[in-house]
Every structure is written in C-alpha cells, then in structure tokens.
Image 1 (cartoon, helix red, strand yellow):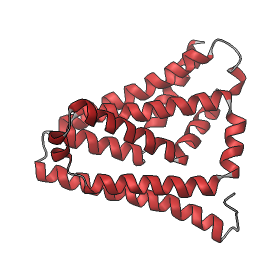
Image 2 (cartoon, one colour):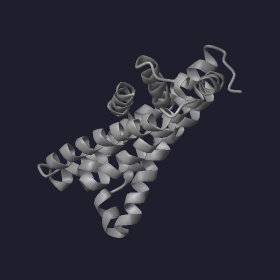
Image 3 (spheres, rainbow, N blue to C red):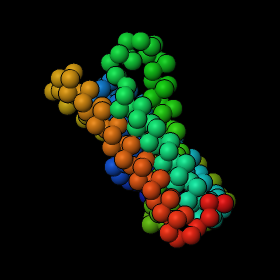
Length: 215
C-alpha cells in the first residue's frame, strides 16, 4: 500500500513538471504577483490533475475511447481556449489588475484560469494516463479502498511541486524591475498563444491531410 501511495505522489510531481501552458501561466503569476498568486494558480492545475487521476483510475477505457473518437475536435477547441488565455495574459497589466480588484477576487480568477487551461489541454490527461500506466496503477485498483489514498497522494504531489516551484520563482522575482516583469508577462503570453496555435494546427492537419472527421 505504501509503495502505491508513493507512486501516486510521484505521479502528481511528474504530471506537474513538464513545461506547458500551465507551467508558463504559473511562472507568469509567480513573477508578476508573488508566491501566493503563483501557488493558487498551481492549485488550479492540481485540481485538474486530481480530476484526470480519478478518470484514469475509474474510467480509463471510456476516456481513451472518447479521446480517440474526438481527438481532432478536442485539439481545435483546446487550442482556441489556450490561445485566447495567452492573448489575455499578453495584453493584461498584472500590476494594474492587482490594484483594481480585491485580493480574493484576483486569486479566484487566477485559480479558475488555471483550471480552464488545464481542462482545455488534451496533452495533460494523456500525460496522466501514461504515468499511471508507467507506474502500474490503474483501473485494477478501482474496486477497493486503496483508491482514495492514491487520489490524495496525487494531489499532494502536485501541490508540493507547485509550492516549491512558486516559492523559488517568487524569490527571484525580487531581482526583476517592474518593466522587466511586464515584458516577461507579455513574452509568456506569446508563448502560450503559440502553444494554442500549435494545438489547433495539429487538429487541422489531422482533419485536412489525414482525412479524419471532426465528429
């Protein structure tokens, strides 16, 4: 049991580690707003990873069939959502936004932004599926009491990763001038837009050149 929980904890860390739109969003929030904002954003990603873990344990076969049947549509819609979030990141002045709204409201927006981006990124759930398969965890344990500790362990692994990462980024934040942070904000937004366009491009490529229907 302890070994399975440790594996699930490592899955949470490994699922959070790849550099993708979520990681870029967390970096942007941590550098522009500080540790708390970055960690809250990371917790949005943690919620998504936990949801995907539940799907991997209970509904892996169904989810894989759905992804295979609607892969092109998921890529197109997900790419659009990611690109739009990147555009908002690029155009937003994070310092003006912090002054304009209450702290709780801004934090909730950061959290929800991470959740939406995580849910719209088809690569995230594929990473979770792959990690569960790699560590030998999956639907075989869905019928006993081991499930809940595994899900909690995945969440704790992801939360630990984001806490340490955002704390480190917040430390380096003090070394940047405000003008530099604004340019970092714009650059990260552009990178997220490129990722979104790449997702849309893959979806269109599959539809046009591989003659794959959207529905």
